[in-house]
Length: 387
Image 1 (cartoon, rainbow, N blue to C red):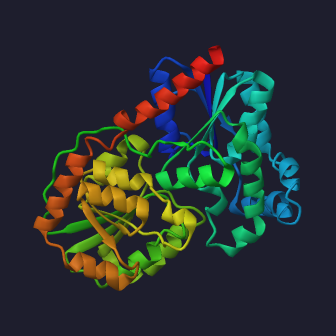
Image 2: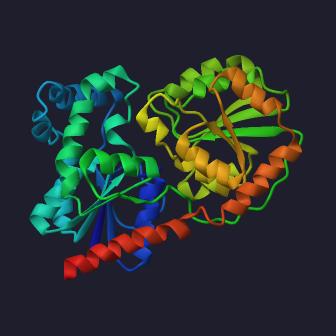
Image 3: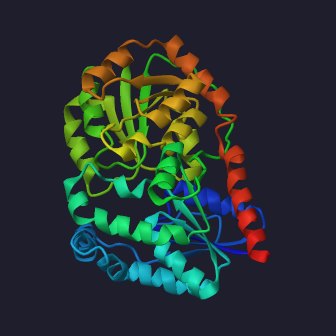
């Protein structure tokens, strides 16, 4: 069976797509990824590289020209969606591949997958990484210019999918309720199992944020809080930056010296070993939108796999994982003072207890366990197609 994973975004740091492709290839399927550069150094399967989105200015212009009209005339989304060289190339190359199954990663890939269903009788799995209709609901620009376009595309094509999967129980329940679907399969963003040795906390405590360095991740608040931290604590921010946001953060951190450092992103297979050099993994996200309340980011599982104590905003999906593992604490407020107070209450012994709990739970929270759900779903669709 020929399986295509369509991802209208850069592949290099998309750990979910890379994990899924590797698993399916190892299971004996013929797998090809369709995605934008940059690519990882050694992709797990062949990749068809799609045209990139261009500069930030071009991306914003594309939103205005192709997505904003749907705010007034929703039906325009169907035609304007194809006013993109990336999507046209993806459709052309996908039909040339003649897949039996297409995994459409996020709403942007749904119409492309549908084209393969129509032309090749391919089956579709829609992998909703985010709750698309609410993803950036805290931005008035997105609500004004893009939301109606996104909603139109998703609601038009989601019912064409033969199966739907997503990353959290909250998103699964929301999609089922919104579109009248059978409850999607939940396949969490867990890293591959990598045995990590316990590393006791020393005199210097490293707090790590890793992930995309963009607005709305609480990074400004995090940097502001560092001045209030105990003297032995320092912050490391590691990940790819977008739109020059890292320069803004470097300016905010200018007076803090070595207490705040910025590190380049590492390849997906190095995320956990590199994170293991820290002591605490932190994640901030305002509980102000439906999308935020459903968040179950891969970094939480990566922190656990790396044997870190986890400190996070108190969001329902994250609370379930952290509480069940006993590996961290949740912030009642995402303020500099609340973050600093939480850190001030820690000592090496309490941090180490959480680190040991994380390593114990990591034996279950990994893709070797979770990936079985994907294989079962693909097998089910393969048998249905052969019937």
